[in-house]
Image 1 (tube, rainbow, N blue to C red):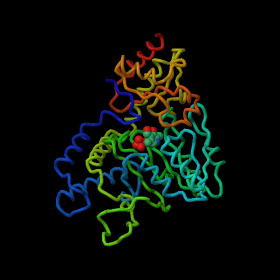
Image 2 (cartoon, rainbow, N blue to C red):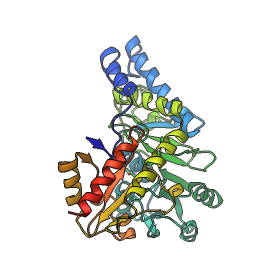
Image 3 (cartoon, rainbow, N blue to C red):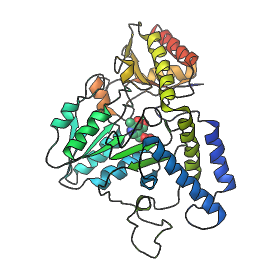
Image 4 (cartoon, rainbow, N blue to C red):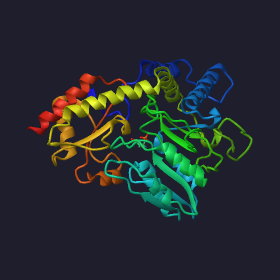
Length: 379
Ligand SMILES: Cc1ncc(COP(=O)(O)O)c(C=O)c1O
């Protein structure tokens, strides 16, 4: 099987990730933070160390402001719904995933206004359009770092600077970039960073995090046991306990710990440059085929490891089926939970066939995938 669906979740993971998950379950699988015995302490230590690793990777000052969640959707919901109140206004874009758009649309029911800024056909954003959308009651700007449909990289430094200038919190959805592109929450004025653990950070599914680099008040809908301030009937008001009620996903976090260590060791620059080389090769192999449409930015510099294509007006799911059944190639077709992004690039009717690479893909694999597409286009 050639796996080119890394934008959904990365596969495989580094061996150390699998080892750490098993080790956590077999050797110290107690309840971290809920006891003072050696096994619970060992689990708590791994969890704290993973906060430190995330803080290091994204230059967050205080590791205690790293909140563990179950995926990027969980992180985004906590931030969006915890911050916005009736009468507030939020700005986002048409390239967002439903994990941003749906919570924002849900909040409309409660009197939270929104503006969804229209992006260009290559998935790029004009930051002036974001600034022009700001109103007196704008409290939050939410954008993706890189589109999960076109791979288009957003200019986060510029958006962060606009947020700083207008004193608005910037929530960055780094689902497609964390572990691949450089992100510095302090330098880029990112108030809140949402990351999945299971994509570019190479951790197991069921992991994610929210990194808070802001004093903004974020309310929580989840209350429960935290192992701290247990005599109080009220949820602790300090991070991370405020948002981490209930037993942690210790095996998942232990696996994520190994994934982040792998990234810190390799360096995001080297991972990104490998992925860039792969998509460059892939695009060159199909570029001259007139029957294939390639979407997203022209320049390689503006794209992460994601390339969506279509063959004529063939339904994307039909192409995906042939790739899977005849060529043993795993990709994702359809709308990729990003209906407005498809509308922006004009593929809302047939969807698109999305190829997405990861750190362990090889050049030969993308060449085989490109050859398969060229063959399918001649069927
Ligand atoms: C840009 C973007 N945001 C958010 C998400 C949601 O991530 P998760 O599946 O971890 O909830 C995805 C998932 O593909 C994504 O691509």
